[in-house]
Length: 101
Figure 1: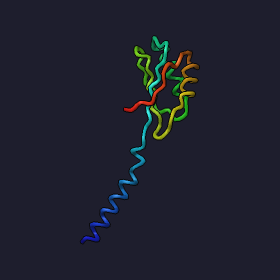
Figure 2: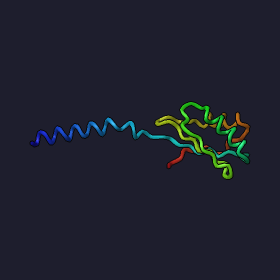
Figure 3: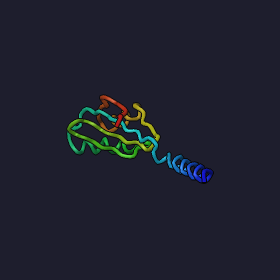
Figure 4: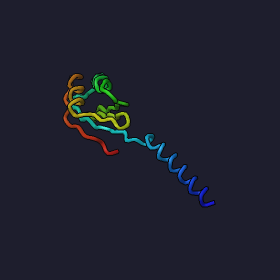
């Protein structure tokens, strides 16, 4: 009976470890952008940032000049890439930070 319980515990542990990639970190970045004033501005930034490799989603709060970029699990965004994308949209990246949410 004890051997059966140990075997079941081992199998349960394997199932949990096998599911670990599901819990991979999904990095989120906050880009503070100067000059966002309207939905057309936001669309331009969203389009350029969304083109970057491994971007999962882009959310924009126009009134705060805040662009939230969610990356694919375990992928990162460099400040240089973010700055270039924002610049290509015609705006200035004021602050770049990795979010802790």
